[in-house]
Structures are given as C-alpha cells and as structure tokens.
Length: 266
Ligand code: MLT
Image 1 (tube, rainbow, N blue to C red):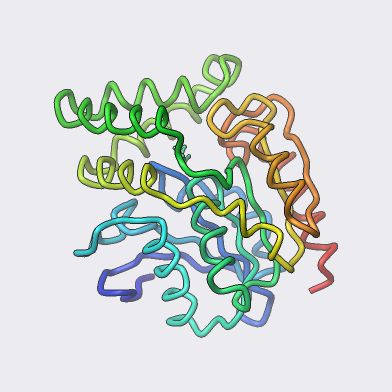
Image 2 (image 1 turned 180 degrees about the horizontal axis):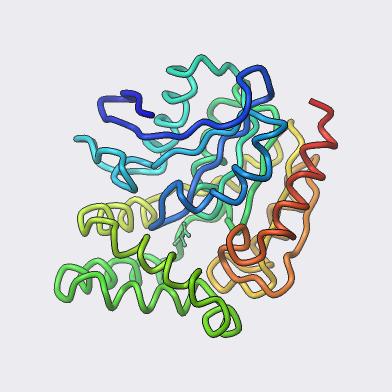
C-alpha cells in the first residue's frame, strides 16, 4: 500500500483489524519494514499493525528534502494523518527509536505508549561522527559490500553470525538493497541528530525498553540511561541478542512486547 507523505511516496503495510488499537513499527538503519514480519504475525490477531519504509529505504521514494531524523519524525506524523490515526502505540528499533523519541517529544498527544528497542537518547559523539563520515567516504569509494560486512559484525554477536545463516543473509540483503544515496545521506542525518535525553522526563505514556545483552551499537548502558529518565518505563534485557533482537530472538522479543501491550488494557 502507498500514500503520499510530505511530497514522497511512502510504502506501508497494514495487518489486523481496523477497529483495534494501532501499533506502528519503525525500522532501523539501513533496513526496511520487512524486518518486522515476525511482529506483524504475532500481533495481527489483536491489533491494527502498521509497518512502513522510511523514505529512501525499502520501496519508499527518497523525495527531495535533505534527510534528517526530524524529517523522518514529520513523515511518521504525516503517515498517521493520512491514515486518520489520531493516536498510536509506536515501536522503534535503533534509528526507529530516534524517530519515535523525536516524534513523541514534539507531538506528545499523538502517542499512547512507546516501545524502544536497542536505541539511545544521546546525539553522536565527535568520534561517532568522524566514523560516520569515514563510512560515507568509504561507501562512495568502495561501494556497499565492505560496509555491509562490517555492519554485520557490529550488528550481530558471533554466535548469531555462525548459527543463524539465513538471518544473516536476510540482513545483508537488506543492507545491499539500500541505495548508496540513502546510505550516505542517512549516515549524515544520524550524525546530525539532536539528543532527546533532556526531554525523556516529559514522556507521560507507558514505555517499554528492550535491549539485546550483546548489543555493541546501543548497549545496555544506553538503555539504562533511558530507563532511569522515562517516568513510567519498564525494561528487559534480551539474553544472547545483539542489535536486532526482534529478528534474532523473536520469541523473547514478542513475549515482552505482548506482555507490555496487554498491560496497557487497550
Ligand atoms: C540502526 O540500527 O538504526 C543504527 O545502528 C543506528 C545508528 O547507527 O545510530
């Protein structure tokens, strides 16, 4: 399905019944909405589940604007407006979490609960920025393959890399299918993002924080920091998972999400 949001064609998927509470999933970088298949299957019986491709990613158009996390958050609100969704539960993983945090701090009335997986509230440190700029140069010079291989080693722990070959292939394919322009411009958007830590204490809705015990990109300390600052938050560590627990340890991830959604009594 598609909709025009802020001047670009956004592709999205809807499952479940229209009269149920809405849960919107936002994917990480550089992936696409297909990463949420296991969650669609788990929730479609009780919720109206929506996933979408962030502009430039998956099948959504890039559009003409300069990419930023703020723009991605406006796109999320634009999607909700187009689908006439006044309020939703939102779940964002990593970059999806940056977008969810930006959106909820700017538009608090549009969200009824928040799920943050493997994400953080800080902006990039000077070192992280320098690494992103080096990655951009590298992709421009050498293409995406080397970037994809390095990313996999950061995203997944050795056990997953060795044992879940199909998953590794799927993740690699998602990275390789992302255009160079999207990779480079989103890396710049990530490097330029604003922190949201100073606004976490204003979040009034129930929040669930999940993190893989082996996440090297947004580690446990980053999750703990958010947990200590969001007033009504619960947190769980997903043992053995790296940066993508919804795909690596689907059962544990879905279990925590379902438990949290049930506790909302929606
Ligand atoms: C992601 O998974 O979205 C990225 O790792 C986020 C980041 O690099 O900051």
